[in-house]
Amino acid sequence: MPLDPYLAERLHLVADMTFADLADPGALSRFGEFMRDPTDWVQPDVAVENLEIAGPHGPVPVRTYTPRRPGTAAVLWAHGGGFLGGDLDMPEAHVVAAELAARAGAVVVSVDYRLATGGVHYPVPLDDVCAAWRWLRTELAADAELVALGGASAGAALALSSALRDRDQALRPADLLLLAYPFAHFPVPVLDSATATEMTALPPTMRFSATDVEFMVRNYVGRLTDLPRDALPGAAPLHGLPPVHLLISEYDDLRPSAELLARQLTASEVEASTYLAAGMPHGHLNRTPALAEVGRSLDFFADALREAARCR
Image 1 (cartoon, rainbow, N blue to C red):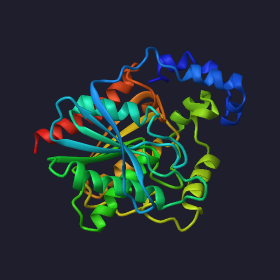
Image 2 (image 1 turned 90 degrees about the horizontal axis):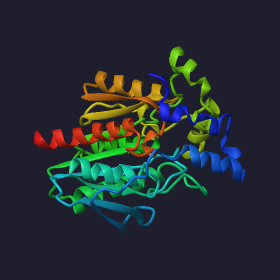
Image 3 (image 1 turned 30 degrees about the vertical axis):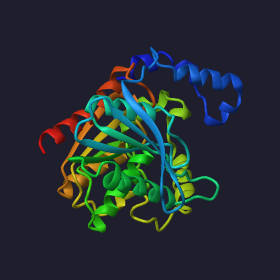
Image 4 (image 1 turned 135 degrees about the horizontal axis):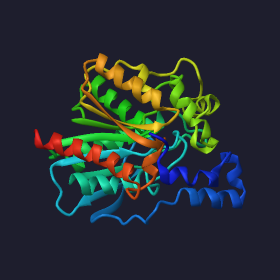
């Protein structure tokens, strides 16, 4: 389908805008207006607590979300941001965690892993996510019947890599993986011609050029060649993983990475289900359920959690 109508009618606010343009107050104001949703988000009835846990590189901040009547599931969630941006307050962290907690009746932990800035590189962000995951599994939710691991974009790569570490170290694996528009491959496969043509109307702030992708990889890993298999985990053996639920954004230069990952998982005899968020660009979970497709995307994950818990 075409780009979501609400976003399409506001594209003029960011026409031809680059991230460098955001240094201009006028451009920044227009970008903020573009990112405004139709209505304000109201946090669901969940208790929120900020904590720190021990990690191999020092304390790791986490934020827990507990619904009024928690069920038997617990989730670790890692936000995106190209490995160098994002925090616990961004919608892709805060809104997603609160909504999943409320919709699935699960305890959700959002992890504020170290970003690839100031000389930080792989494997530090991954080590932080692994530390938070093992804390959730062995301490916070040691008695949970179902434990799930998830994330968005770069966070989805970190979640998948954490699951691969568990498999390789013969630790208790996640029962479920929830991956939103993952950045799992380098180079990223090319878009199909029809989608590429439709995306030409999108501004640079909604696109990933080949230069952008190379910068993210070099900034995260420190190089472009001889990449560790768990840095961009689409290059790793994927057998032996738990069921994976893949959320794919329709208008996303990274969409081919998610689609290739789905095929790789199936070829590796891993159960994989996908949901295409129609009309949505990359990072659409940085919006709120005021956009219907964001709500459906959250329900895709929440339904997976409820169904998996029901079957245990």
